[in-house]
Length: 224
Image (cartoon, rainbow, N blue to C red):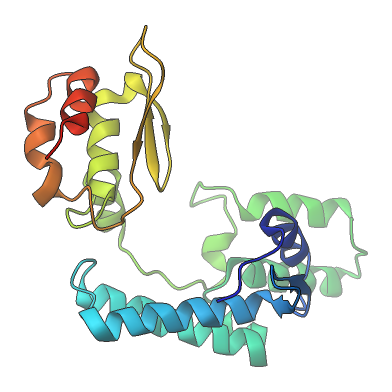
């Protein structure tokens, strides 16, 4: 898969390109569309699933994610409106476009800006996203559980438990690292590059035996 020459610029390019045709510069001098990058990522993920069975993240959940992913990429290439039930910006675009056509409004009209904002209102009785036919993949109960119960089989377990227990000392929590502020010491970064480390099996004991963030960071620094 080609590395992008300027990933930040590429994000700007593709985020302003509903046609999906924008060509972004790769590091080797060639150009590639964002959807082609997605297809390459999908192929990598599918190969991993075929080789491992997706046990680390749940076989059925992994299979479902790949099914939706492939369906969405296929829809984006052939007819984006066919995936308006799954792609947020398409659902929103369809809603605003239909309203503008029905009321003969030009882009930038105050009513359209209001719809733009109301679409993202998280209150169920106020927001418009819930009325656009978007499919639901998780129940309310599952969402509430996920707020406090990170999965045990990925680095999300370590990240979630650290935030739960040591929130005052957690300065930053990213996909691939945790940054702790232990007071007088320099900031301490704990790398989490491997998604399959930081699991309950690997770190539950050290978390249980650490009364403070300082003790946890010290324990993690000890050689295995």
